[in-house]
Length: 387
Image 1 (cartoon, helix red, strand yellow):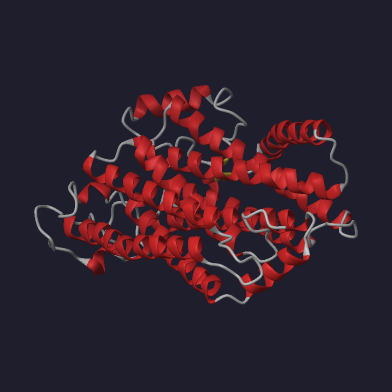
Image 2 (tube, rainbow, N blue to C red; image 1 turned 90 degrees about the vertical axis):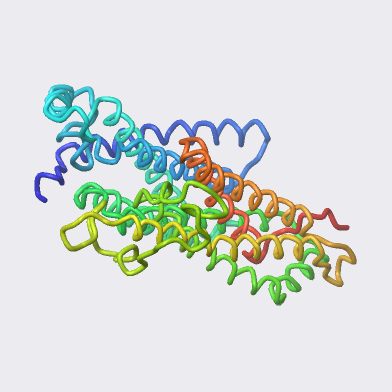
């Protein structure tokens, strides 16, 4: 395992990530000045929004890296054959490609893998900067608690460790699935901060009354339960994708021409095993793959149904203080994302797992997390413009 972790280019990769992070920081500075905003709160909110956007990009690009079989495009970490870029590792990549033309190493796969790492490092640099600034500016008016940024920093460090393990453990499904869940946890953390920062902007008495009603609402409590179920469904979906079980069923709603095909749940859900293996030295069987696929499909029916019910309930929720529904737009967004997620999921099955549909399915999961967390965090201004 020692050869798989080569920290020689670590400083250079980190420096490159920090340099890339200066681009969004410059865009934030331009936007803040153009809009005439001032104060740390304005900077913190805009920079956190941008970091959230780049994290969503990172989630999708991570899926692209995996779906193009580029996860081992550079078989060491954090660089590529001990170099900062595939340019410097040209000879080693060429030799590996000639030795195994159908293997995981090629020039374009190496670039995809390293671009993912560069983007991840840039996001890490932004989060680090947000944490340092949050502690320095913690006494400023409107500043968010620095513990939010600190928790996000701990998260990004853990994600880096998972990224290293995806290489050292050769894309072991449990690690790759954990990496996906970790990515969506980061989306949730940043979404919560954006929501909380948005609430700091002027609040009227009516807004405060609505926030208090929402904080005590049973509908909000049900929302946290729905978020948990969504996390379980994402884990099942990650398990399907990392085990390449999407194509175990090529039709919907039936599978292999049956409503209940042969399935081996014990084999399918052995958590600690190599990619493509059954954990006992043999290959995972079709019934094992079918069990993985069907578990995700069955649970999807439950989660999507609850999402629709929750979106409709949101559109009708009316606190006494407002006299009218205040989450109509949020409910509509949730319904739209749910429909899009269903469509992309069906497309993966009936169209043979096209790359675009698979990427949209990953993005849809991330956006559902963003939508629910943004809604459930207290101290958020309602959609309706109330007077």
